[in-house]
Image: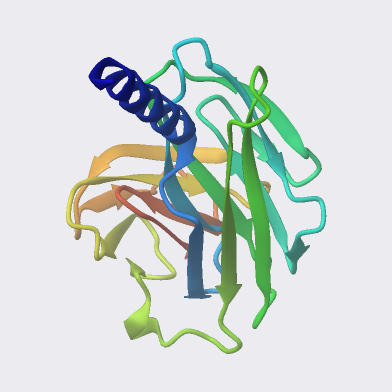
Length: 223
C-alpha cells in the first residue's frame, strides 16, 4: 500500500511539473502610457524563458491578427525585428535559456492614440506549450512638458555636440537616426551629461534613442 501511495505521489508530482514546464513570458500584461507622440519610437522590453521539456526547443511567435493599433509597431525577437506586416516568425531556444524581446511602437505624430496587441508564443512540437501576453502603448493627447521628458537632449538645435540626460541608473548606448530611419551614429557606452559629437552630421532633423535598462527616444535639429 505504501509503495502504491509513493508511486501515486511521484506520478502526481511529474504531471504537475509537466503542466508547469512551458515557454513563459515574464508577465501577462504590459502597458506604457503618456509617451511623446513626436518621438521616433518607444518600446516595451520583456523576458522570455524556456522552461519546457528537454526536447521542446522550436517555437514561433504569432501576433494577434485582430489587434487594435493606432500606429505602426514591430516585434523584435533574439534574431530580427519584424514590421507589422509580419504576423509570425520562428525562433529556437534551448531549455533553460532566457531571451529579451521588444515591442516597438512608432507613433508618427499620432497624439492621444493607443496601440494594443496580443503576442502568442507556441511550441512547434507541442501545441499545448503556449503562452501569451497583452501589450499596450499610448501617446499623450498634448505636447509634453519638456521638464518631464524621460530623455532630455540639449542644446536643441545643436551645432557640434549634444548632451543627453535620462533617468537610467546605469550606462546606456546612444543611437542617432536620420529621417529615413538609417542609423548614422552610435555611442556604445554613455552616461548622463556625456557630450555626443555631431559635428560630422549634415544639417537636418534627427531622431535619438538612449538604450539601456529601458529605451527612451526623442529628436533634435542639427544646424
